Length: 223
Image (cartoon, rainbow, N blue to C red; front, side, top):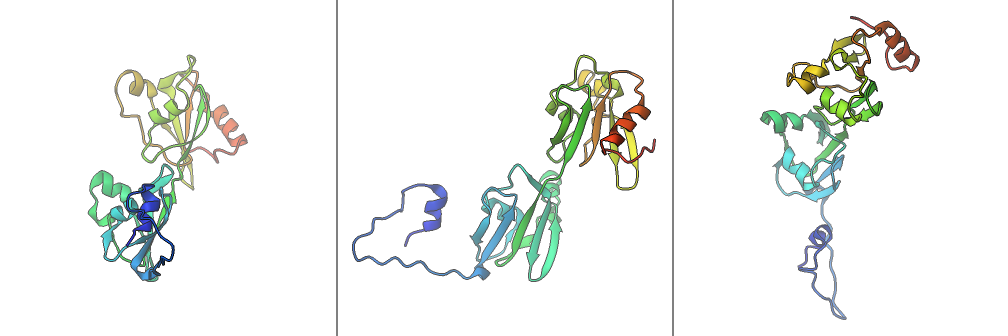
């Protein structure tokens, strides 16, 4: 008996027995009902043998774990005609055991792609759009953009956020965070946020918003 799947996954020759003239290779057919499919943003998506229930976190590990694009806060399990959504990020970070659901043979697990694109503009070395990891903060965004320029006035940094109904501007004093160790303004960024680092302590937000409106990044400001 040879575990051909293990040979392919591990890339080793151990257990890869030699065959001789006249030998017969029999590859059995496996019932899909005893397999679990793990798809989407995992390292090795596919179908995996599973003969009894396991937890969702272990199921992801069968597929090599989440990849760098995975949104582990958005994992879907399709089972017997029902669709359920789970937040594995909460399980990992906060020990939310109810999010580490049980899955069984025949289920399909789908890991969504993370959507967390943030725009870092103004006085940074490389302004532009950046795809950030889940939970990334304003400091992370400035760092990804190459850091602030010499002209930057970090204390006047702001985050502009649109929630689907309105757009608001929130203070994000990066001077406190980067130079004074005060992380109170180092907020977690959300998909679609704009982090703007001005070159003056009294930014002309009206003109800044006109610019952002022209490039379709905002839809109107509510202070």
